[in-house]
Amino acid sequence: MKCPFCQHEDTQVLDTRVSEEGDAIRRRRRCAKCDKRFTTYERIELSMPILVKKNGSRTEYAPAKLRGSLMLALRKRPVAAEAIDTAVATIEEKLLTSGRREVDTGYVGELVMQELKRLDKIAYIRFASVYKNFEDLAEFQEALAEVGHPRK
Image (cartoon, rainbow, N blue to C red; front, side, top):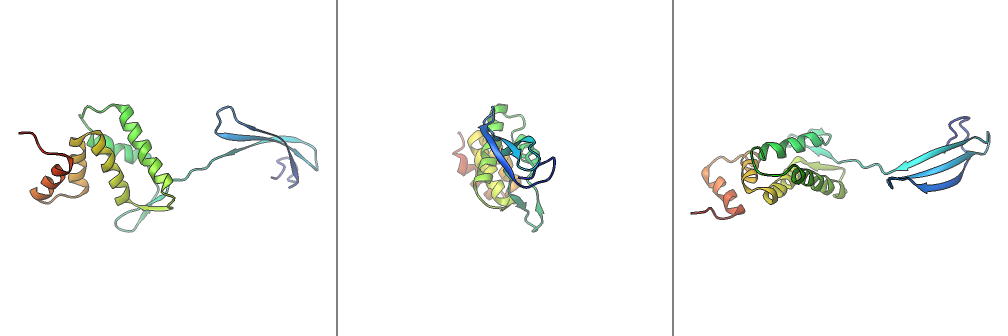
């Protein structure tokens, strides 16, 4: 660790503590050359994988887009905001724990469909009809069969 005052590379760690929030390590350091003291923090850096679109182009993960897709499918449906937040967090956790640097947008779409199926069957059908690009009634009926039998 370089000293911020004299740029010397030899510093000593005097004290190490976990931050009050528990999300960082605080280290008190002393420069061996100029004898000045300073504090450094170590934090976890999480990076979401890059999304690879169907056409091969790459884009950064955008949480607002994910939330927007869920909100559009759930529009006018009786689903609590907390449930939507939980769904977004679950999808993000699966993306982070996948360990992959790049994921297909198709994989993200499947994760969204899993969460929508759990949250609201109608929203799932709405999303699936656009995502899977239904072209005839048979495909629509297959999706309906996935979520359960219609009432008579």
